[in-house]
Image 1 (cartoon, rainbow, N blue to C red):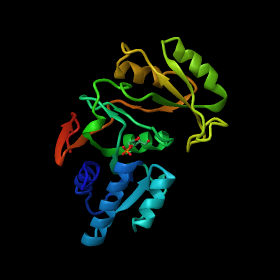
Image 2: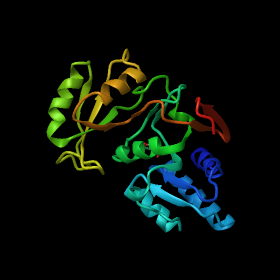
Image 3: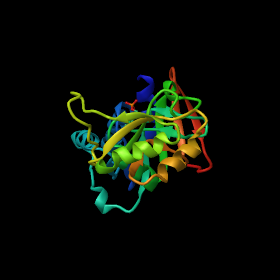
Image 4: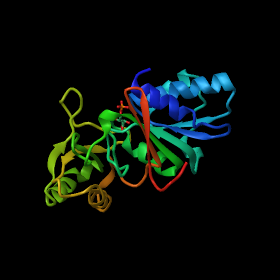
Length: 229
Ligand code: 5RP
C-alpha cells in the first residue's frame, strides 16, 4: 500500500454500522471509497454514502456502495476527504478540482470530518504551495477580483482545460485563482473570503477538520483538534 492508500484504509476502519458517510474527491478519497466498499462487503456493514462530486458518486456506485442524494439529508456522521495543504492547526486548502462547494457543505455537516493525506501536504501557511480557489457568482467575478486586489491579492479567472473559455465549477460558478500576501493568516483569510459578497465558496477550510491522518513512509500520524473522535 502506498501512503495515500494507507491513510484511506485507516479512515475506512472508522465506519460503523448504520452510518451515513460523506465521500470526498481525489486520489486519496478514491482509496477510501474502495476500502469502505471492501468493509461493507466483507463485514455486511449497512451504510449509506453521499458524494461530494459526480466522479466520486460514480466510483462509489461501481464499488457497490449505496449513494443517496444530499437533498435527503440534514447531517452526516462521517466525512472523509483529502486536502492540498494542511497546517499544524488543521487549517486546510482544498478544491484544486472544481467541487469545493459540496466538499465544504459535507465537511461542515459531518459529526466528524477526517482528513487523509500523505506528508507532502503539510505546510507552514495556507497558500504556501497552491493558489486559493474561490468560486464566484459568474456576473460578479470582476467585482470580487477587484475587492480582493484591495487586500493585496493577485490572480485571475481560471480557464478551462483547452484554454479557450473560462472554467465552470460543478456548482456552476466561475473560479478565481488568487494568491494573498503572507501577512494575511488563515483565520483572517477565511474571514475576508467569507465576508466578500459575490463569493459562493472558497478553498480555505478553517476550523472544520476534526482530525487529520498523515501517512509518512508507512507510518500514520494523527493530528487532533478540540473535537474528539
Ligand atoms: C479536491 C480536493 C482533494 O481532496 C485534494 O486535491 C487532494 O487530492 P489528492 O487526494 O488526489 O491528493 O480538495 O477538491
